Image (cartoon, rainbow, N blue to C red; front, side, top):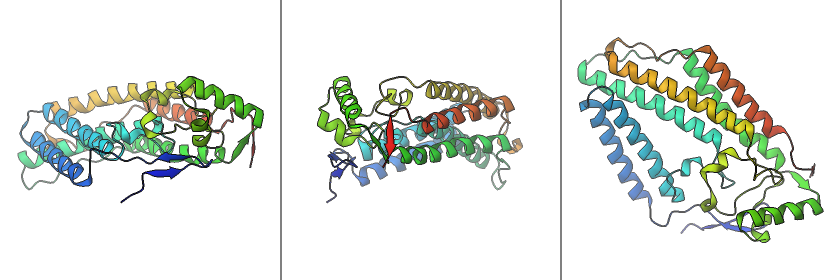
Length: 278
């Protein structure tokens, strides 16, 4: 039987993610059913509705995986500090959109043109977008790793711990044992909230809105909605056998996403909490 406890970097003991209501078999059954429904939806539903059905099924699969591991439908967004991550959200959104569109067109092409191979390719701007979101998701924890090896001045640390305890209605022992260097961390994965993606990450600024994160969120959602509408239009109006590539993303969108991700990562490099390397 797996242990449901973990020891934090500061010596505290907290529960590891473990759903009391879901097991591997139950998750597997739900995933198989969702995949089957996605296939049937892509094959039989009218254009547009088929893509919507596949997207819904992919989102359902993500929710099932989250429930199965963390007992939370948005569990895929929760990182090792028990906080919801903006870079995880960005990567998840683009992954769902592109895989849903590709799967829908692939199945529709098989149903309409048996034996003919789908000629759909990923445009270079699409690959650039996926690369940006992947790099952001990878570099983010690497940058945070340096902050886990910093020590806050004792007096300031006591003040920040007390402030966090008052803010979240937790004990000072819970806050101190869960914090990682200068980084704030929730005592439990159950404390993760969607609002985490807009907040600072250090003990000094965790309760405040991070402008770089808000900017990245807005740019990502704007690009996602506009490009999502473009893909829906493509699926509705074109025969899958005539589609050779995903629509090209405007260079302006790539630039905005790149700049916002750059600002997001740069803000992580800055040490907002007075500290020294250990």
